[in-house]
Image (cartoon, rainbow, N blue to C red; front, top):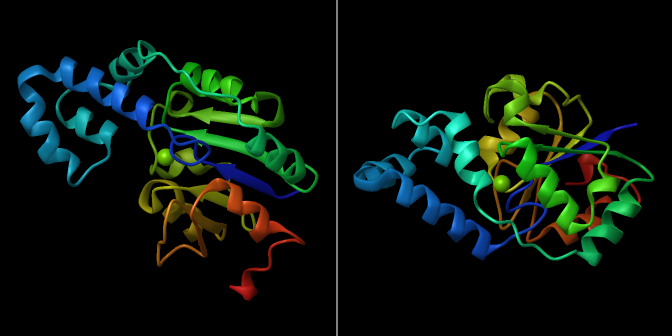
Length: 194
Ligand SMILES: [Mg+2]
């Protein structure tokens, strides 16, 4: 059975409130390094930027563990994943901590629908590091909101890539939000159609 490998944040859910609460905790922690951080963020992901500033992934996970996650159950997402489950194994792969991933999936109401989930904590590496994508096989489907972080390596490995949240020219398909996945995958996905 093929797999669908989902990124989590800004892919399976979008929460401006959670994103800004997390950012606030980071900025408070950084203190006078904030200016440098914003410069680094122009070219790098959050975790990469923090790494350059000497903040380890572990410290980052601890910081994020202090931010309350307050998401609603998503009935539309639940019904989408229930349908997809007939044809695919469902996997979540995120740079968040194991704790945050589980908490998020539970609150969205989809924890029991996910076959397995992987955190950057499992690898000691963060996406887009190739090791993180060990579970991606040719023909699998990868879904994410950041092409470089979520989809570039899967594409090289022969996976079908779906960009969420707008348009990306290098992805096999782009959708505005996760719910549109239903239309794409209805009746099976044929790469040649796109
Ligand atoms: Mg994301």
